[in-house]
Length: 319
Image 1: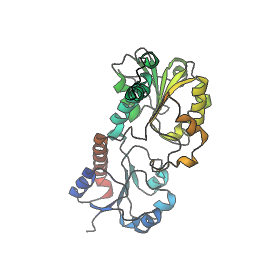
Image 2: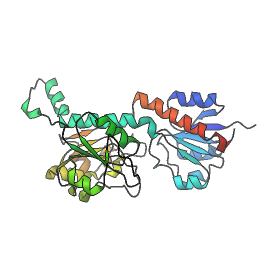
Image 3: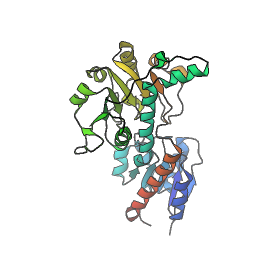
Image 4: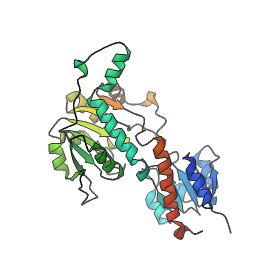
């Protein structure tokens, strides 16, 4: 019987390979350097494991004659033509369950850092500067936080907020009946009216691209704080900078940037627009390099989620 083979295009926690090999899969590391090398060998594989290095579009998937699954060690599937893959019987598996707690924790951490001016205070104390009044913070208690997108990370963020004395409202266009002890199910008009803080937890689609634009920010009745741990292109940076300058936006926590490349690792600073240059000098903006879901624990958990989902396909893809 021909042995089933899985190609690892990107790195993943070693447990993923170990568990698949224990299940009888033959696992190979991708030896090539670019997409064309991959196209030459992909027909030999039943499955591939990716993060976000290579775009799996229709032209690529047409060459993947024997492919039955794509395992994305992460949440977003925007670098895969999911519809075409489905038409060819290729299952697209991702692992948002594995990094949701990490994202929820970082969203809280960045928000506390922003409200308590910890970035500036830490830098000043290290220089022997002792400013107490200038670094007076703002408490979360009593604030209303709006979550847009109540999936894995949105719900994890809501759970992490329990105990802070906040009111949490959530809006999800595609979900209903999810209100619980952590969140009140709401519509956007209520978020626009009541929120002090807004947090974005939506996938990147045609519908959500630049969702957070000037119109979006100006729809809020209060001046707000903004958190984005979803995808960079969900938020219009120029609109954010304009909102901060006008005082409409009191501060922002951004783990993602609209200028990220597909690999999320190669920002070409010399090509970045003026809005980014303005963003990075603002004291009331906290930035991190797309690491909200990138913990030691989440690497293991995402790998095991993918293992579980591949095992769940056994009856479909054969032994």
